[in-house]
Amino acid sequence: MTTDNGRPAIFITGGASGMGLETALLFAERGWFVGVFDVNREGIERAREQIGDDRGHFAYLDVTQADAFEQAIADFGAASGGRLDLMFNNAGIAASGMIDDQPWDEIRRIIDINLMGVIIGVRAATPLLRQTQGSLCLTTSSSSALFGTAGIGIYSATKHAVRGLTEALSIELKRYGVRAADLLPGLIDTPLLTDGIRAMAPAEGAWRLVHPREVAETVWRAYHEDQLHWYIPEELRDFHRAVVDKPEAVRDERAGRKSAI
Ligand code: NAI
Image (tube, rainbow, N blue to C red):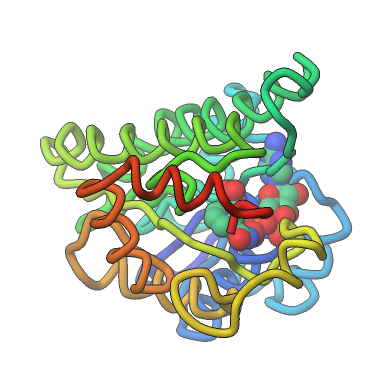
């Protein structure tokens, strides 16, 4: 299918659920052509029903597979009229466990999806991003990239890596006129969260439960404004300042708690 070249286009990994799905819905509502890519086939079909084939491209993609990713970008480019205005490297998993308890295959899987999947996505998308004026390469990092979260140390490590990668890309990709930014979400009410974490979230402040629609609105702002790090909610910026000023105080305060939040 070839679409109107006048429509801006967004490619979303992990687009079948949570923050990715909300972002797909919001951008489709606002006239963008949306690419929904995921390993969740039922979720992809649900997204297709909600958005419609005239407003999007819906396909299975495992972000850890480099060849498949390049093919997905080629298919998307053919459907979007050769443009990619926003590449949203968002897919991720969160398996918890202390470092000495977590099995090796689970550790490798988290790194493969959360970090290698983003690296593969950025490399695959760069040629099409270069072709599209004013384009943005956006990644989903996490508040776990501000201070490592006990009990999800490997996850935190991948999200730190994604933040560092994005900072480097924000300079590297400038030579092609492509911008880079990341999301630093706190607790977003998606299927990724356990019921235990959801129940412990406070009503207010940096660690309140945020609706994924707020993330979608932030993706919208990230495209339209020039900012490198997006805190969701904004109060996380103060937490980040506290981490930089007094990491030992943050460590000691967290070590005294029953839960990571
Ligand atoms: P979600 O579980 O609702 O969505 C994640 C999607 O990624 C799922 O549809 C899943 O099928 C897909 N996925 C998993 N492995 C994949 C693979 N190999 N290839 C392609 N797709 C794959 O969770 P949510 O919350 O929307 O997560 C999106 C991103 O946000 C993740 O990177 C997550 O780490 C990050 N994040 C989430 C937070 C939260 O509180 N929910 C907080 C901070 C960051």
